[in-house]
Image 1 (tube, rainbow, N blue to C red):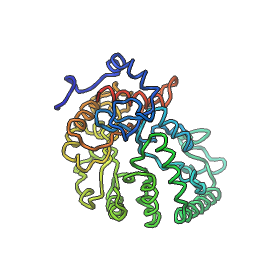
Image 2: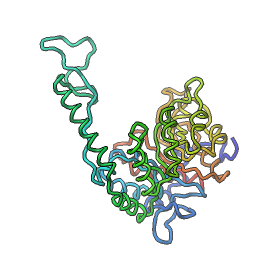
Image 3: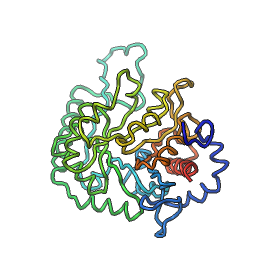
Image 4: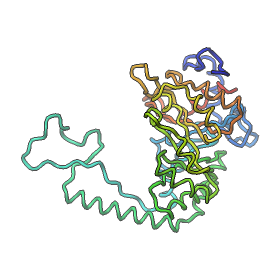
Length: 360
């Protein structure tokens, strides 16, 4: 591909750590701002700036999934050096006063008294903590309580105090962080709740909301996004590896339908260079999820890796967007296991510095 810095178009972790150690050490102390034309240093106001060489680097706050609480997540963004984020909606409604929702766990039926479990069945507690042994009566009672809590949440959404979300936006903006997307995933909500999702996202400064790509979601959310003057932005997993899959029908459903293109999932599942897709659909790509993975011919294939240890051509992707000056947000999605001696904040900060090393 064009615009490569080396023959592979990929910065290894060893190369990165060797050449960028001093810059990374300095940047690790600097929170960054998307409104600045970035050099990766503090702005005049001392706010973060993670816009490098004209390319806005951010992160989806799913990367900090080990952290709970709105204020704690905001602090993680600051400490990681981010100036723009795709904000997961998890927790923000409860922070704004929404009632707690009861979740129904993955169900495991209790065997009849005195029976012998089938061969290979898990012994003791639920497998991996993913389920719970419940009687028919207990499960029915839990389902009823969960339904009641969902109805209470629906009613709250229809009269939610919007000033709380204005306060949330101010918290982030005062820290030098913009919110460009809110991930509500409302494709199965009522029309009224979906309107609420777009209204809240707009109040928080976002240009759209994200959901998972699919016919039902794209057909339904696009027209609602149009009504609100926003985007419905759709995220992919491994669909591109399915025979005959194309995003064209989904994009044709509404001009407000845009893509949150996961370049890592695309490469890991197809083995194709992400730039082939980005070049074709750049005007319908609102944001890109960045991660490093192994390729199809590596053992194990399609597995998340520490940045620089996988095969995703991250450098090619960033340099293409920089060269073409496309206004596409590039968001880190931390999915590889965090080492015991590190933290999600430290790893995201390292990924930010990795991007900076490429772009400056």
